Length: 290
Image (cartoon, rainbow, N blue to C red; front, side, top):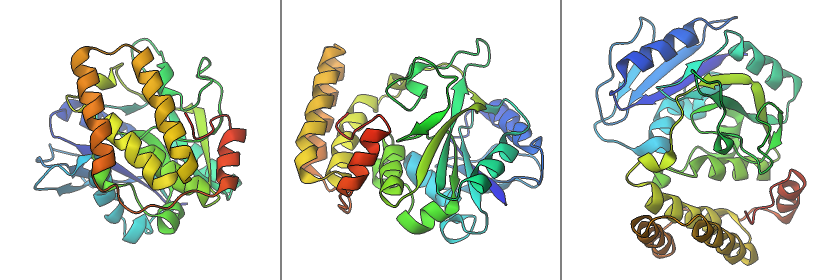
């Protein structure tokens, strides 16, 4: 089973990028072919054999990753599995690629694997990095309904069947959009605690566009993927949760601006999931209303 890896970078973390690429090169088994995409920036020096693509503009996280996918042929079909890794991450073990090969070979309906993200100094896994509601035990592997964008592996047949990441999202929720489409097509998603990417502990709100894009893309996600009757339920629940978290006035203003933008701007093609997929999501512990 051939494995490739896609890394997008803004060119501002050359030391971290080099450490990540070194950790990929140390993986057991057949070598992992790597493509680094400079998302609107030059790519720093990389080891020999690593392919690079420099984009003239920042296409956002999903747009940059889609370019990386296509570097492995249409829909990534030159390889069987693609790893997607943050440029400031580091594979903690040398057997991660082999574990991916074994997992995909053992389960023909497994489409996506979400890795565990851990702080390199403390070993802590933030609750938000466990892609399920019952996240108190990050060491428990399980079937899940979404995955972590910068620490995952995807069987390329998934892209061939349901398409890539939604370019228009730019940042936030693009993984859940792909996950819901994959689940609706019959694929499964696993969270694996033994596949670890070291990554410094951060807050997602560090990004200036965070509150606006999280709200906008949440609306787009619902409009694109949910049965019509569930759209107001899902968005109502998330509005309530946002208010309960008591964000600052500026953050709340940005959030409501993004929420409004999500309703007034095109969201891309609408393909509502089937009700049996809604039931599958519920059985997996996360019905698509939260």
